[in-house]
Length: 337
Image (cartoon, rainbow, N blue to C red):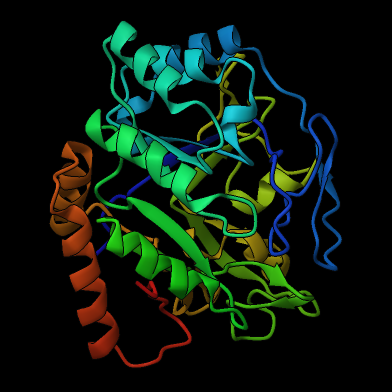
């Protein structure tokens, strides 16, 4: 029996730059400069040339395949560093769900006012980066978003879990004391020269690559509007583009492709991808966010879209149960919490 359709996300990087300089991040660059990957991979840089707000608004509003995607995600880098960030996220309409992944370093009151003016709604999923963010200021912004019903009840705040540091768990407890169910996530990238997610040589490493059948639940869009196959392709100037959002030129995106360099690709795209043996079709790796549009996942998307207040607690409970029942598995990955 063939797989159900993929649960798909369009992930728009308004910029790949960030105003923080976190020790564990591979996007520590000044605005308008190319971004270099911290790993030893041959992938070197991606252009950070940005489109104007008017180009993004016109392109995303005219995109003819909106119904193929469960959500439109604005991420980066830090998306609010785009000078027309509020205009873009409030004036783009017609998508099932609009989500912003952000470090909350911007004026959230302006976002709320812009949404009210445009009679639109966004869901904000903040990431707390403890090396730079100030806890009380961050919580104040979350309070504003929650009072306006814009804060995600699915992931009210996410915190990276690093293998040799306790801050993630400590701040998670602090957020819980403030009434927020923080989610702790595995770090999916290079930290202190070591990739901390994929356990298999050649599947997430850089010393060896393998040929696999490869698919992704996310179609990233570069700052220049190019649509690429998976997150790793945003780091390459030579990756295949399946059209451009702002130019309204599109090519059909294949459900699965055969690639030769899976070890390098996997570095930045692990959680959203699946790899299969190119001969037998047997699974080699499946990230924790790789999903099909099964009835259960359709329900999940519906609940996230409605942003019900009980979502974070339900998600936390489901993760705890799953991680207790599921045996350690090198193929299928799960969330920490």
